[in-house]
Length: 214
Image (tube, rainbow, N blue to C red; front, side, top):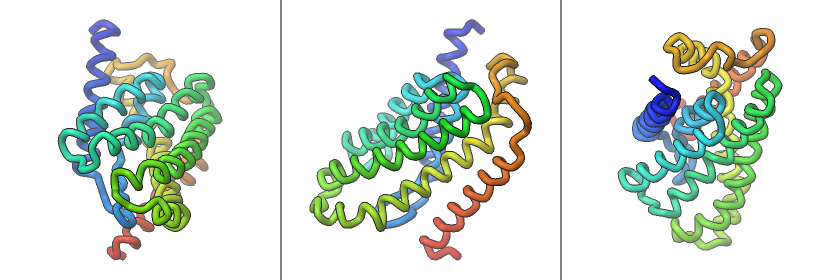
């Protein structure tokens, strides 16, 4: 399989997996805000194949989501693309420039901060339009609702991405989709794996608590 065919196949595979993640993995968190794990898939693709892969998959999946399961139309699609790209593309760009463990951590942390800031701004600007809420009401929800939601979302995305990167890249190498050189360099980050696991578990418990399950 040549490189162009492999790239097209890979992009299609990422789109399919990310869309399934939206359909079966979406869970309510607070108010009308829901979390789905598609950003994890898209970010993994960007870390492995570059930021353009994240951008392409994000746009395709958001468009498919808009015409199939979304109730928010074009504006909801735009919000999806901004949210995903602010996290996934930022992390991918940084990691592309520095393919080391510190580069991966810096990329995920910076991507998380970019997503939180971008979504606070865009929720303030766009949510009143497609949800029909007064802007004053949306402004009052920024700190008690939108900020915690996006911090929780960023924690899950970054934590799961860090935990899954090594096994995913190992599996892809065995399947000959990537060369052996594409990997995080350095010693095994056991402490960071544990820290990421704690973040993921904490975020999951918060979601369960907010939904009255625990």
